[in-house]
Length: 114
Length: 112
Image (cartoon, rainbow over all chains, first blue to last red; front, side):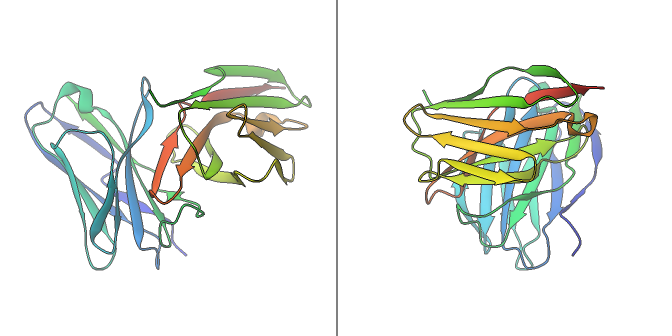
């Protein structure tokens, strides 16, 4: 099976712009989670989607949003970018997102905000 | 406040020795704890899961312990090799929340 894919891999934006990141989970996986990783804060949970519904959300401002499509693919949007949004954004998928499951991570999208 | 701490940012050990990494947490009641490995420029890769009612789990050269009284997990790599050099992350899984709380990671370097 192909792994989790994320596009684009690298992105440069300027403050105030918005950005959309895409994640394709492993075939058959219905749960997709998004994380932000920075050197100072580590890996922080953004949100989790299952069957097109957001089931859980981390402590990020409303500028961060996401959605999931019927084929389980997911997108994450960040509006009004700030310098502090520069990070590696990781998506992870699992079959149903239960707490007993392994998460499979994609390679990430590295976002640089200038 | 709730937090997870991994013992140190970086750990250097000699090849062949046992590496021991620590994950401490406060104010959580996790159902499970997982350990991941992350190489530069890549996403984390799952290594081991241990449940709250399990004391120890092993997989090849890897061993994880979980002490819910001390609120601590230890991750051991025996007979370490340079190829084991990576960042290791622990993650708490809160029961029924579909939410993973990650530690900041320990960067392990195994010296040849």
